[in-house]
Image 1 (cartoon, rainbow, N blue to C red):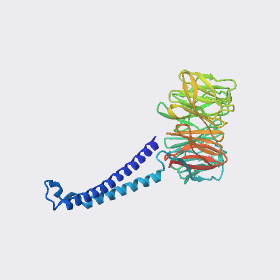
Image 2: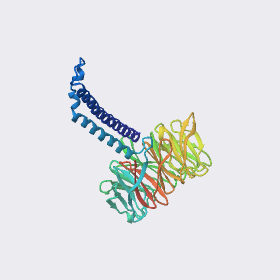
Image 3: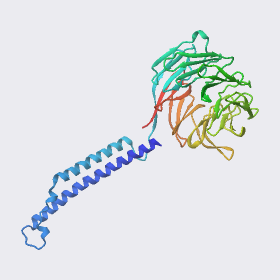
Length: 429
């Protein structure tokens, strides 16, 4: 929307400058010839006696040559300004292009997790157990080694209240000061954390919720010191992540059901079956009004109403697994991607899921990110951008394969391609 307004303003200025320049120049030329005509008439009739007095009048006001010259000069200048802006902008009816450019790269010494962004700073871990912080231009800030603890991180972590939290596959949970990397606390639990913790509050107390991938147990710990507040009962293997909405922790797992727990005390609220062939290994997305969207192994997109605690509908979106996390998108709709390379914009109408727009991109879609008026997605080794008409406006190849998308303050995105961190800037030109 902002880019469109700026484009219209520039086109309006361009044509206004050219029009005013043309009028001023023409006015100067017309004034010059009116003066010549009036002077000729004066010279012709000045010795003829006549009652027509204006023929004997010397039109002095036409002799203000500097006014004519100023008008003609300003007209020429305005015309040139208008033409120059037209040359820069191109044809007024031609839409501007959204251009993606790589503005930075960082090759870590070993494999790393996808960074978490907090206060426009990057935090990530590598396979040696080191936790690293960089600024948005990949300049190092601090590096904390945990090599003597046999730590393996598989997730990007989370950040809140000037603290960075990471959870490991061996059950370790770590809290770092985001400014200098000092370890504030660390705890070990009988769990395997494959997904990032979720930061939130319970009765004004900062907490973390963590989901164990091996058995579906949810842990709630105090964010101040890592002390366990509660843990839920086990369910089944849960490879995807959980989400929290209105004091409900919810996730889908390998038994083909959505599991709801009370976020304050860990008590089970409900188990909502989706389908026997609809095991879920992706992280769900929940809207502000409590509609949960999650893909299944059977290629269906399921919609669960968390308020009514029931399955509303399912829709077949793929012949393959549909584990890509959906995201909010244009006009309150939800965007989803598939292994076949389809990106769909869906909305719920009268209890049924409808696909309102669709675009097929270059390769299997692995992640989606919505930023104001554009939808970013990863497909194969490409970063692709769609506009509100669901038309591809830009695409750039970054690597053989890319994963993870994080948004920076200036609108740039950070992703990981072949274990290289890449920063991409997009702008209208």
